[in-house]
Amino acid sequence: MHISAFRDALRTPDLRKKILFTLGLLAVYRLGSVMPTPGVDYSAIQRCIDVVQDNSVYALINLFSGGALLQLSVFALGIMPYITASIILQLLTVVIPRLETLKKDGSAGQAKITQYTRYVTIGLAILQSTAILSLARSPGALFQGCNEEIIPDQGIWVMLVMITVMTAGTAIVMWFGELITERGVGNGMSVLIFTSIIAVIPAQFANILSSRGAFTFAITLIIGLMVITFVVFVEQAQRRIPVQYAKRMVGRRMYGGTSTYIPLKVNMAGVIPVIFASSLLFLPTLFVQLTGSQAGWAQWLQQNYGTGSGPVYLATYFLLIVFFCYFYVSITFNPTDVADNMKRYGGFIPGIRAGRPTAEYLDYVLTRLTAPGSLYLGLIAILPVFAFDFLGVSTQFIFGGTSLLIMVGVGLDTVKQIQAQLQQRNYEGFLK
Image (cartoon, rainbow, N blue to C red; front, top):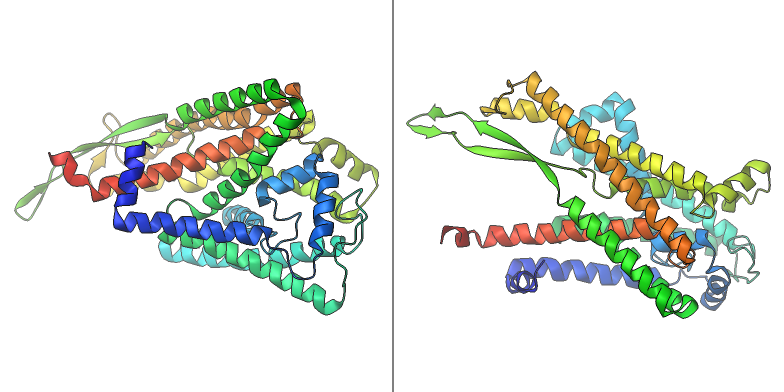
């Protein structure tokens, strides 16, 4: 967005309120991310973080929690329970007829599914906070190689208070995300993830500069800028399906006769498949950390999924991104519903009959677009890993492709929403 457009947004009273409201919630979110949970020895936590800062698993945890989880802060669990709950509900929507019916009921059904997602989120937050705190009670269990006593008082009431605080923190973060979506700018959950990544990346760049030197730092920046440029280029690409509306008489007035188009983006799913895939791949190593198992399967999981850059990890990551891309597009864009709505209002695609042929045509085009879109997402997520590993900065700049993709995708989406609202409030300019 140009500087002038940003200035115009701040000069528009109601839009300025939305932007300031969003920034205020993000400031509170970051404050809660560094505020320790009652009962935690903050100085001991910091010493343990210094010990494990080069471990890729802990770096990945820090990336998606904005450094909150390792500090056992009030917002330690962040948005991850909500993301996991969303994945569970969207997968269950396909196999449970009741949820599928609710999805087709419009806003009322979606509100019910959202309510179920909240319940699952709270349940997951209780389980995750209990598991993490049970590890934190034993020195060296949560932070391998650090034998500091993180929780000095391990009484039952203290532990219950800590679990309650971390669960309540998750509920507040979920509420913040919904408030940003309703009253702020952008998709709330995506903006919170964006904020968590932005909070960690400057420290990663500073680490690269201090440990690898200015040349490697410059090459890392160049690779990052190249990825950002390519992402912006592809994110703007779309296939426009022309739609013609027939003229029809309603009373004494003539309606229709206009031409428009259906914009189908190359990347219809956005960054959601990347977030889903990275969240699932985080679970195997977390499970090994929580169980502390030394069995053969646990060592295999740790060896192949603990580094974040192994061939098995990257292959699984790529396939999950492709799967979630197709899955998310299939549940968010229904060609049959679009074709029925077009037919209801007298719309048709030139050369295609209305009704079922239109739905089949849209499905054909969407399938062909999703194929390169899913491959693009997968390649953008894994190729920078090879580049950063070649430069020897993969441990300092963990998940580079994913973090850049999420930042650019969320940034573009937020900017488009601001521009759309500016156009709505300044539409008279098109008449001049």
